[in-house]
Length: 495
Image (cartoon, rainbow, N blue to C red; front, side, top):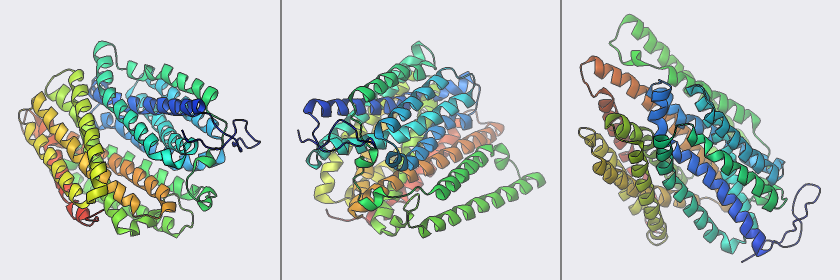
């Protein structure tokens, strides 16, 4: 195994100096970081089948239920924004240990939660920690393995994380069925404690600044505190406002309703203007929080658009599928776990196939096919809700997994490849954060729409009001996905 020249004994700043890590030490680092990644990925996927359970136990609507996903996604975005700066400011072992400890504290908070608000807060703490753990892990793996081994070790990382995502729903559903919802948080507490112990026993003392593969200019980058705080305030204000929109937005027009609509329109314009001002500020900075100028690269722009919309389909499935199976069909949470696990496995196999094909055939054709399949799966889900069956849901979700596997990886890979090597890290961060922020906003809007539209349909005498509202959402998402076909066409036709 290729070894990184470094010394285990730390210098004054905690960085490794000249020397070598043994094969055993490198394997121990890999095992520790893989276990940390498993804890984060498993916890995230295990909670998805329990969304209807949270709604029932705490007597909340789908809007509050959706925040189990949103709180994690938004907080993870914040963690991603902070990870680069913290990794350069403090020693790796300290930052990584603090992140794992934070994740464990989030698990304890969730385990003892007396209300839905505390559950949401616990998910936010876990999301913030997860947003630090994943990029720090990848950075350290790049540090302890020579460049010739990066592809293989990242393939192993991807396989382990994907398997965690696949097994998580099944284990989570079993815990909910056989024990109680709080065990979903409790199970990660001992695992997190083990990771913390292994970090201090096996991880070498190294400044995480050394884990960056970017150039020295990137290493010296300062933190854009104004951009970070302004974006965070904007996001929190927007999400709070969206969550307060209720059924009156869809009620019959009256004088008060018209006034309310005017007020909502004014607020929407203010949020849009504020975002434009933030965007212009970021473009003017030499060291911005997010390198939004990368969107001037047409291939990168269109690949990011596709990855965002594919993420919307994934997030919508994670939110609504448990409700369809457990609330509409009255089936066990175990079936939710099984359907999600099968879909994840199909997606991972397809992703492996697509990764090989994109090198030989380019991303345009594969991306076009993947988008059409993803959109078709959304239309099939809308049709399926008229008379849903488990086997039909498994088929449809597997089809969605194929679509995501074909559309997401090839287009994202080509987008990153179109950037200068020194910009790939920033491009990956921008893509990740864009997907998470847009999906969180989308899920909030969708949950408000389903809550409001369902109430309206119920008032009109439709017994399956929630199913009707979800059908409309699936059709709308199918249209959104099809609108990205021109973006796929703008990608390179050949490798």
